[in-house]
Image (cartoon, rainbow over all chains, first blue to last red; front, side, top):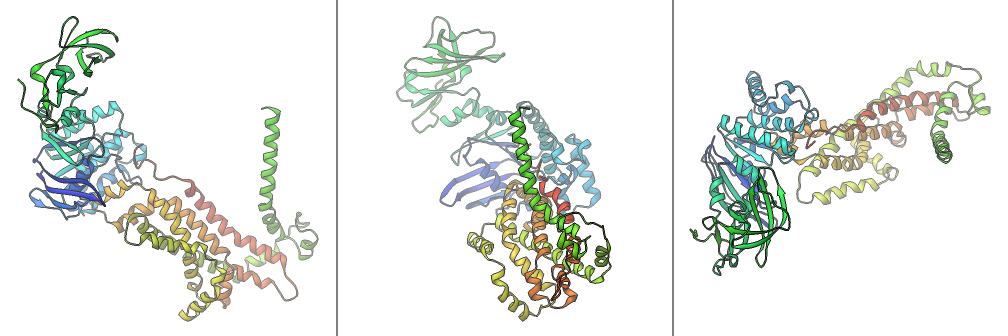
Length: 336
Length: 276
């Protein structure tokens, strides 16, 4: 368990600057999720922490120690890859054991640690199998097992659930959260899926084009996004981002209102709108409506509310839930 | 099955039989020739022997020189294969894994060897081998053969190694595994198909090589089998039946080697490494 601190990190590949200049602190024992659209530099950042990539400038500190020029194996980290990267010619036990053997851990201790990891991850019955004989979820667990036996100070995850199907992903998400609680270790997790970020993290780092847009607890980001980008990225369905004129404010470049913060009425309201697509999800009904002269607005309604495409509705944004952004996309003072 | 379908299949079958016969007929003639007398070979080259006479095969098998030639060929071929695999794989690993200044140029230079015919180099080769003092040793054949097989081996290896998932190395690297250990523990074990392919190729080439051994080997003690075969060629008479029996017996190890390697050539070992 250790704190990870990145100081003025920059990274360029040839002439292309991926990370211009970046500072970030990952507190000890936290589950920090780096999230952002593809190509935003989040994976590069993780690879810099792991030591697979060298920063062009800047310092990486793990547990207070400068590890910028240390080999990955000397940093006290472990990493789980999107493609699992299991060793195909080794059994599950050998896969988990490999790092320990290289670190010359005595055989007896190795055995105990592998058995312990297998128990935590419910892999005990599969230790003699090859990766090709395992299902996707089991492979992912082996990859996690490989990282927990090394008892690292920091766990790194590079989109570990992207290759799993939806049901398995939800299950593994819960398992990862439990793992974090039981190991109490620092975890840094990269994903492009904001749902994973919201459910797993106690600190989310939203990145865009190599810069950090905002760092904070999931609900902070949800309630008070500091930029229009974060506002649009966090939350599902997406926040509605409309020009300020939609609420009669010329000084506001962009106003945002979440789909769940819009009141709907059949006869009176601020925006007259036409329902275009109605998605009934069971618990919720999501309506994509068009407001003439303003644009498209998404509204989330309780599941028992029945609507049909083509119906006219009246929408009223809840004033205290408005998010206002200036021309640079920065948050303006709260309206309420 | 329709009538047209049947005709087409029959024609296909007939064509394949003709092609196969081009390969098999000489082999068959060789095997059968070993059972015939010289006179019979001259009158009935392709048919079954009138009398299955095993004495020619027997004579060759009981000749200690035959076993010596075979042994020499085996040592030289296996030496060439092992050396080519180790040197070629190591070089290809560097080309596939590490980007360094001039790597592309160096790789192209190595590939130039593909266009260099063996026979044109035979004289300078002889002089070099003589100057180094390797004449009449196994190395006189092993080293040049290895050198000449390297271009193709490196080309094939590099393509294969480059297809191994990059994350595999990164995962091992984080586990504390360096380049050299990765080569021995991962790259080689996962490359059995390509090792078998290149190995077979080099083995068969070395096994059948005639020109190089002819030039650099003078002592009967180190003769390979193609040279040994020449003992049945006299100035006035060639003992065809002995020659054919000899060839039949010497071709067997190459076929065995091929059959043994065949299953690896088709096997895909990387299954389950990534995704699934």
